[in-house]
Amino acid sequence: MQKYIIEPIKELKGEIEVDGAKNGILPILAASLLSTEPCVIHRVPSLKDVSVMLEIIRHVGAKVERNANSLNITVPEIKDSEAPYKYVSQMRSSFDVMGPLLARTGLARVPLPGGCAIGERPIDLHLKGFKALGAEVEFGHGFVQAKADKLVGADIYLDFPSVGATKNIMMAATMAEGVTIIENAAKEPEIVDLAIFLNKMGAKISGSGTQTIRITGVDELKGCEHSTLPDRIEAGTFLIMGAMHKSNLLVKNVVPNHLKPVIAKLIECGVTIEEEGDDLRVINDGKINAVDITTLPYPGFPTDLQAPFMALLCLADGNSTILETVFENRFSHVSELNRMGAQIKIEGHSATIKGTTKLQSADVKATDLRAGAALVLAALAADGATTIHEIHHIDRGYNELEKKLRNLGISISRV
Ligand code: EPU
Image (cartoon, rainbow, N blue to C red; front, side, top):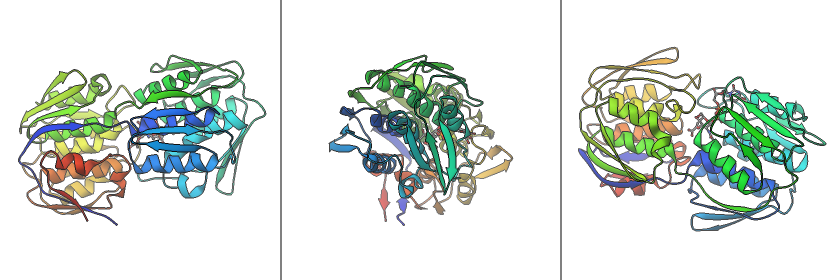
């Protein structure tokens, strides 16, 4: 088990670059299974989750060549319509391969993703979509299987704008007969990017980024070239890091439009955010106002930045509240932040944070990816060296974090 030892900093100055989006690249890798022709994808972050998805698509038949940050993926044939348990069990978004496998071969078998650190996370909406397209869905021996002689377009209403279900149904419907309409679809930028990628492959998708997505089925998809969009959650994490200190930090390679609620809340905290083209500058004098936050599906405040923002609010002047509405159990970082001297109380889905002037160094553990990011931010504002255990969670989603932080003069070591 590796751990981080992080020394606190007093002031934060310099530049930090954002990489391609983890949650953008994962469905795009799955979507490359839809064609026999090569897909070339640029700005691919080197993350644990990306390696897991590559193992899965290789297993089912993809040939993958890496050249620096670009991937060339060709899938001449699907050799196996079953995704192996040893990979799927590591990452819930492995389930993204279900739609493409079903669309390309009429059969997809994927182990049930099960519960995870941030809640049960069912897949009922994905399956509702596959069934509406004409697939027979069965469970057995820990697998979910979807099978169809042919898929036929349908009107599908999602009870909740699930990111995963929207992606999977969109991919499954690309080669269905006729028109599919997804109502109450997720509007996240990663959905829009996936639709752009699929349209480059020859799909006919309109309305992505709105609540109604329309997919007109085509006979086949071809290869294409694409660059992954910047990771808005990584960008948000760095902006929040800047806000926690006396700082003048340039966060590079950002789409400011994707971060509107985060920027708005940082400004409410008293932080200055300046737009400089594709970069955002965060300037603060070290003072932070208390604010209230409610996580929501996009374009609301992202649940993936709830934990990092909570680390910031630990240092605010006054009491803040955070209401988590997307996941039922995403407060595992609270006990760890409290070990560092934070004063956070949870009641149901709501956390009340009583601001303090200084956090204390301690031994803490990352319980999931974003909880881990919150602890890194808290460690930088502590009164001594903090040890963060179980950092494999952080490796899932932050590309070259140590290198990026060291460039800012931060002392961080992996042990
Ligand atoms: N849900 C259902 N039924 C379903 C699907 C989802 O009830 O069939 C519920 C979930 O249990 C959850 C809520 O809907 O309570 C949101 O789930 P959603 O499907 O929208 O999320 P996801 O696709 O599982 C993606 C990201 C998450 C991010 C959420 C919300 C990827 C790989 N994962 O998950 O990212 O938190 O959307 O924005 O894109 C992370 O990066 O740390 C992360 C967890």
